[in-house]
Image (cartoon, rainbow, N blue to C red):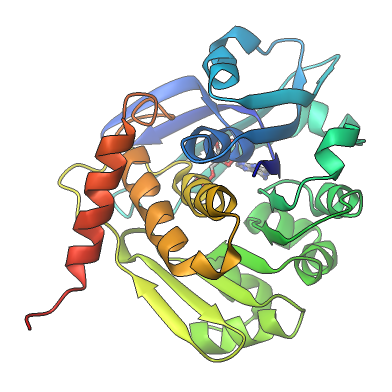
Length: 300
Ligand code: AMP
């Protein structure tokens, strides 16, 4: 089954303790798509400016990604500038230029609206709401956000969360939106909005999954020797998770999907932009998946 994803397509300028890169390809929707396309066809919803070089993401078309939901507007593409210090779990935003995002009012192509899997990647929550309201046959939907939107449109973020089955959110952001430091209590406040699952991303400490029935699942992060650039790890994680669920067409396989998400994120952080993801094979994904399983195995 295919997945519809809506989010940003961006030019990022990033500095980490290990290097810097100007105008790197990025954005929540692009990271998600590169990752999910290893598992399922993806239908992308995004806006770009006239300055965006579409040929740079032409490789995605060969991987079955549908570009008919991409709008090109007069003006500049969304830009994000940020840095990380040695605490790579925390991105510091230096500049957010919304640019053409402010003119975006998507009407989905008819074929998109029939799909059953939807990921609302980090983008203006008003757009997230507009998009989910156009979907007619949803089986599973999830949403993400970030501090920029939590601080500027908190009520809209909560409304978007109330419309999805799962929320994927990082640790600092779930604390910010709920006003709860304790993650169990924070998850409960998200459940009060409506979702069945709260998936909290904790960077190098892995991911915590809470479900509404009180079950908890935890996956560590891959203990990498070299972490180069954590940008996009969250979106790449969501791409692996949603991609696997859509491939199986079975939302009960959530735990396996969370492990695949963790596998994809672990590759992504090894190089700038999604350069590493472009080089890996399905065999490498499978090998790392098995390693993840072994992290939690005990002796007979
Ligand atoms: P992540 O590291 O997974 O949280 O996502 C990183 C991506 O989010 C970058 O490639 C940015 O272009 C994008 N991004 C940064 N700020 C925003 C924002 N306010 N809204 C949507 N996307 C953003």
